[in-house]
Image (cartoon, rainbow over all chains, first blue to last red; front, side, top):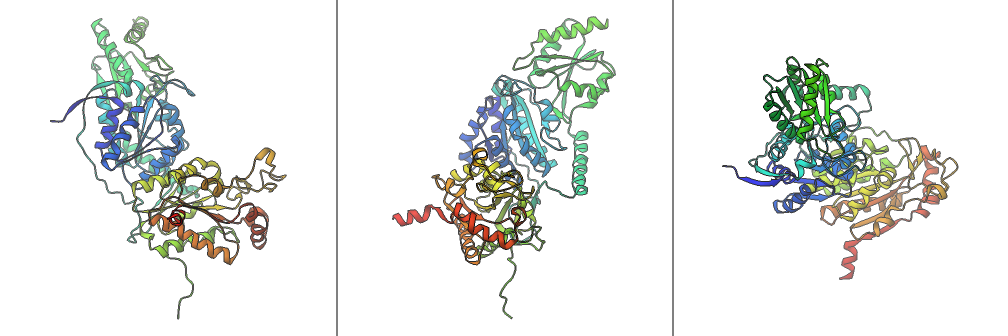
Length: 353
Length: 252
């Protein structure tokens, strides 16, 4: 039987990463992901791993790039302003087709913003973030259990598709304590013939690179990468559907917003309102198909977000604006309560009936 | 017949793209000779910069990683920390190492990362067409200092060797030049030592190589080599700026 322990979300990520075979962590202090780095600082030296506090987020992500080049599992974590600094390196990691995990425990922005939870880095995470055409596989945990489970999955998917993955959490998930069954130790061994580990004079040299001065070649790498992305959109979409079978109103929310939304669905059902929830677990690839399917029977969608409305665009696109989408949001570190969501749905109901 | 001269084994057969008279070719050769002499090619991973040497990954026969501008010491840190038995070197120019990558340089040095850094200082941004570098001399005319580098507005050149030698961390800091036979021979010995230090686990070893850029200096190759003697070396004196192990040995 796997052990069940009480853990903070940030610590659950760290322990799950170690159990997934990650022995290299690079970071720079920032709230509210602090516990993650602290956990790594304590654990890594005991297990022959590497914890290094870098001089900046920029340096940290480039250390990640270095380890990723060797094919070993590696991660960094930060919070919104720090993740902005990492974008240069993330673009290079994507451009060089390297697997790595980046954790963003989001806080309110823009600028220095605040230290309370937010989901306002959604565009940055799902639309690329840095320069050039690329995507990350973006996973959004809604419990401490998922902080652990999705960390394991993020490493596996990054290796499988040779690309960076991101765990897009928020300050609430990072700070919250819940019981968690930690994943078993597992190290998926994937052959990485591209890794730079020294030729041992046995093969031609490997080169990790994202520079192509011949535009035809660079174009080809972009098209090839997007073929992989198409496969991911087909095979790796993950979401949870809650009370959607007969739903007339579909809430769409991830992370902490999804937990609040679930409470709102229960309360609405108690009032006789047929509400349901689609909770994207991957926000890239976005669960387009279930949203499109829901559009066939719901009257409207409600995008519940801790931002000024970013995911709402993807909901509109997923169902070609077939049904209206309204925004129910808080921003700047505030969290919507169930009453706000219930009111948003009831307002729609009033409008429709 | 005895072979008296041949290409180092750790250089590939790729044709170098450097301008006529550029000293990158010499420096590539010296690095490759050090790798050959120490017999470490099979376990060496090099990190190429952004700048004229961006395509160094095609020229060195060992495994190579291309880094973002200025980030090579951070990338090398990741490589070395995950593969302590491998030999990791970076090859960087002055814009890369002394301007945009200053933080990465200083912190890799102060952590005494066991890596070798080859720093090519030719006092100009070559690849982008001759802009003022952090190491451009006072009064030096470049595309972005067309009236000469005015220290009142553009500040003074950065003396990397002196700056890093002031830190407690790094093992070995030296400045050499490649503008004549004597200097090249000394550069060869120094670069080899910087690699040997890493093999022996001694720590961060940086060799600043005072170098030329005839194209962007607007000179013939010969004039450029002479300018190194006349202008560069007086501002950037050659020598060993820090040798921690030698100092400790002398103290015993």
